[in-house]
Amino acid sequence: MAVSRKIRASIQKSSWIRQMFEEGGKKKVEFGAENVFDFSLGNPNLEPPSRFKQILNELVNDPAPGRHAYMPNAGYVETRQAVADFLNKHNRPDFGSDEIVMTVGAGGALNVVLKTIINPGEEVIIPAPYFMEYDFYLDNHQGSSIAVPTKPDFSIDFDTISNAMSKKTRAVLINSPNNPTGKVYTEEELKELANILSHYSEKFGQTIYLISDEPYRQIAYGDINVPSVFNLYKESFVVTSFSKDISLPGERIGYVAAHPEMSEKGTVTAGLTLANRILGFVNAPALMQRAVAQLLDESVDVSLYRKKRDLLCEGLTSSGYDIIRPEGAFYLFPKTPDEDDVAFVNALREENILTVPGKGFGGPGHFRIAYCVSDEVIERALPGFERVLKNYRK
Image (cartoon, rainbow, N blue to C red; front, side):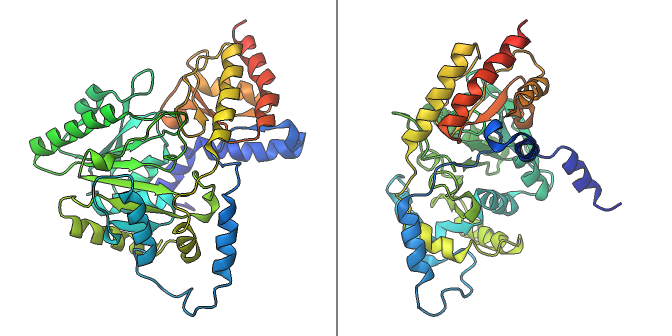
């Protein structure tokens, strides 16, 4: 056997997103890139803020010695302090550099947290639909995911959360704004979730953490507020990256922040730092750490994503699709006309429209559209979306 049984099984159920993205590459060769409408991958089409290139140029030409030497495993102290100062503008707790670990993207940050807190056989509750690579991350650390359904509007169903709680529960993992739905959890929802976690932590005599995955935090529309978990629950982590809000996905730079009042915080942060090293990440990229320290208040022009959302939602609604308008991120998660979301996605593929079936996110009967593409791609794809739905309803 060429690979382990676990990896062989994982390959067979690996990400639908990547499968469709790779299919898109083949179709672009066959039909021409301009004739393929690829909504499969959440790869931002907006360029980073203009200051990024200016800062990068200054850093590359910095003559100071030791700029590419080893660093503390948690990352540069000055970068971590810059992140802490940024968090202190938006949160009631008082952060310092010791609560921050710079990581290789949000995926790296989440693996660092899970490595630190998960014992073999423990569980993490995740509201579905969700980014299914969470399952693989948990498996990396001998934990398992317990997916619980959300309400029809994708808000948190507290009964399903409570019913899933057990002595094996180590954490609840949320993602807001959400991939794939674009849902933003309200402060009232997060307060209720914090109450549930406090209740069951006391009942079971163990800490149940709240982990908030927030790479889309700054991509929220209109008056939508993305509340801070740090203001509501002290046993909490935030994991995030600069991939979406300043369009740096290929640079793999992010961080994990631990609540300053967390129980046994010193041991937890020491664990995060050790996990960062022994997982093989060792450090987040040095150059990017220095760059993002100067870009914490920057963001892409969110109004451009909002325009794309509105263009897509209005077009699909007029064609008869059943949608819930996203409040943030750059994903739409419409219902399919029947329960077979894979078949519907395959029908769209015949129109050279590439989307991802909802089952790839634990949300069957839906499909995901990543609208971080040009307005032209959306406009040219809309007639194909309409044709497929009409054919399904004949």
